[in-house]
Image (tube, rainbow over all chains, first blue to last red; front, side):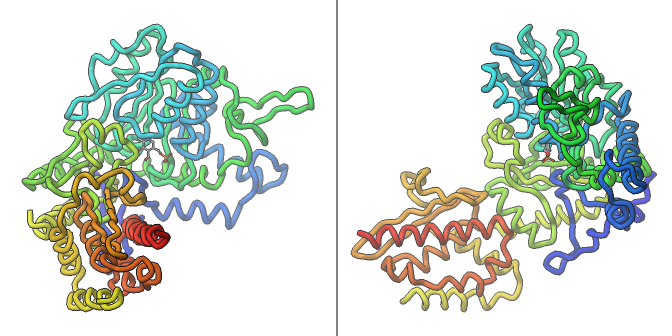
Length: 405
Length: 138
Ligand SMILES: Cc1ncc(COP(=O)(O)O)c(C=O)c1O
């Protein structure tokens, strides 16, 4: 059981007023708000032990380094990785994927090879692979989904001896589908193909266990799991990361430098060029601890209930159509109101103090599939309540009236 | 009526609303009343960048005056376009170039519309001025 009142008190921003109204924040898919504990962790670092990590011999630098590495350990445990060497701190999902596309991609992909991406990817997990394919003369292929937002189950027929990587999100940011990634990974591995999981929209909502999934790479952003912006993780199996060359270079990622040759530091530092965002990384660790304190299983249950309630409520509006009707969904509802543009709905909801996202959600291939200009997306987090959904529902009723529907 | 007078008219019309919902309902009404732009003018060239919804502005130059027509796939955007068409259509390029745009602030549109929306509005205004500049050289 979770104590929602207590949780809401942890998030100071929930007391803000917009246009004089209490904020109803339903744009968590874009970014989540931060609990005071995370805000305090940032302030405490700057106020009490700020010092560049991994380099100083002095007290503060050692302290900052220890806490930074403890944070990595907290995150390792959270995703159940074997070793904290397998966790690279990045600036976020997008950077994690670009690192992979350059470092792993340039090393492992050759002309004529194939990369298989799902049709429901965020641009961040699509464009870097398209560009890699262009650089290498490789073939870019995609796994289609049906009108319920479910990926084609015989996707493995798209895998052949040329396929090098399957890239798929765990939860779709545009449809909310929970993809059967364990099954996808199993089938891909049976054919010797590696899999990258984009967990940007799952890590904060459902249990993610890299060992259980057996994924080769997994990426997510800190800011979507109650942590600070500019943080993120690239998880990779150790042997794969060891085989890759660095992407960016300079700073602590180097072992020795001479004018003839540079050798690189060991994992994970090999991929962390320059001064890392150590304050952010430390605060991300605190965010994960916060999630642990509530319990990801409790979060999953609570949010599933919320989503079910939202589905029921919103489906009762006759002119409203939900996009993404997979059996397994998490955390968000994408919808349109017949005869209206999502932008009109978003603008009017905004005036009621209800924050939603409208547009393509950086997933244009999803919009193209349905031939729509975009959707309205209400996405939930642990501090949302049924009252938030009631407010959304009432707001939508008012709007349909205003628009004469 | 001069551009200034038309602006004042619209300000007066809006001044009776003290509730944001009434104001938006009126904008929606203006959008609904504006005739659709002939589909042959709904072209890539006439499309205004910087709006989340699609907005087209078409301009004709007739007897020294610019005649604007506009459309959008979003009704609020179309309502705002309708206001601009009303203010700037049938005016000379010079008057449009010289026109003061303070009325947007007075209407509270800039302040009350979301950031992307107000960018859309600014893009529309810019396009109107660009047309005026283009025709002023003819
Ligand atoms: C599924 C998915 N992948 C990738 C991203 C990109 O994340 P970021 O912008 O934090 O790099 C997002 C965020 O919107 C997302 O939802």
